[in-house]
Image 1 (cartoon, one colour):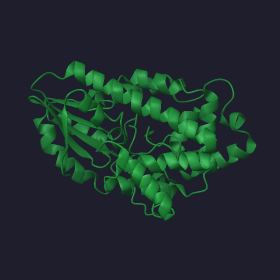
Image 2 (cartoon, rainbow, N blue to C red):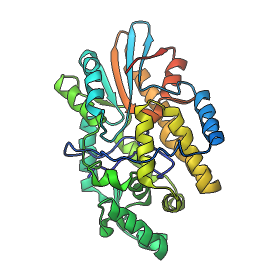
Image 3 (cartoon, rainbow, N blue to C red):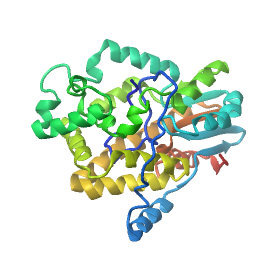
Image 4 (cartoon, helix red, strand yellow):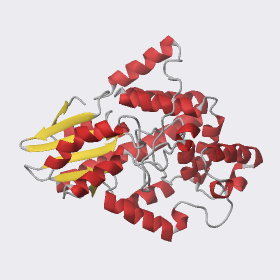
Length: 338
């Protein structure tokens, strides 16, 4: 099973945002339909979200190029689960992979293998190994609801009970249809880019150390983690529709709109706790990571390098998105047709 960073806080962090820490097996993928939840909002709310999205730097687009002197950085915003255009996107990236001197993923293929090994050797990285488990922490009513949701995602109750709450929230963040269709097992574009890079003789590199990422996840206060699960369970919408909305808006390259919608759902249905949770996740798992990635690139990219970066698309737009941070580092950033 592949455990996605992608959907932390079911309505709050998206499949376009974070990378999957455990390599997947298989080649399947979701083919689930649904309703676009943005289209179902009232016109005034839709307009508000579009204004918010448009105000963000670089609100739309998946493929970009940054240049500074004779240094070239190609940037692709990924969706970590397989979808109907995954192979087409990989074909579009193929010449960039072949031309790159350095290829960066959030976590390189080699480090993903090392992360798998670390998790196998130390279950406490992902699971509660001592003390109260989720049936105790959630209480009977929420536990039963949570167990049913996890079973709908083909995760048995005995395993669901022992997930650390943050990891449990990640599992809830993908719709049951996609989970049943093989989304946890299929290879997403990030893994496929890593494989192509290896085959081309330019093994992928990590933008961050996976040990630091695991430590970061463990740093979330337990009470906040439990509240994330409760907010996900309390959301009245259909998670299949949410997954459909995020995927289709990604394929339309409307990344800032997806983030604005995510914030709206968190605040509208989670109240003050939802707003605080979204802000915390945005700060720790988006903005601070973005800043760390640019610092690593600045230290490792030398003049004249041709570089390819493939990271979750939610990291691209915004005042602290990697595109704006590259501009602040002296790069000229341009959108490239996908």
